[in-house]
Amino acid sequence: MSTCKGDNVTDIMAYVLCKVTSGTEREVCKALAEYSDVLEVNIMYGEYDILAVIHFKNLQQLDFITDKIRMIPSVTFTSTMIIGKNYKENGKAVK
Image (tube, rainbow, N blue to C red):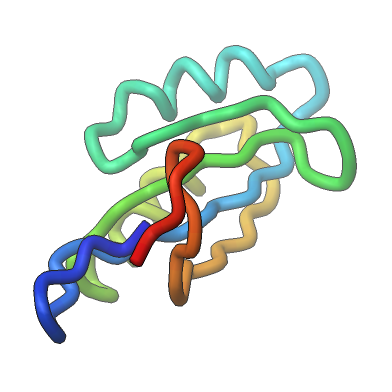
């Protein structure tokens, strides 16, 4: 999911897994969907309630985005996982 041109990474991607107060999943998803840095947002079943896919250019921007997510009142916990290399996207292999 990282967009690379030669050896330069132009966008870095990460998954942000969120736990939220029970019953607020849709409300939090709608709030996250308004953020321009959020590419996808999904309700999940399991240990986490929501998965957001975000993009950013540097760690300062990542810090800013995750702080915005954590400031949503119903978000009780987040876990951020930066994507190292993408092998398949939109059903097609990535070279």
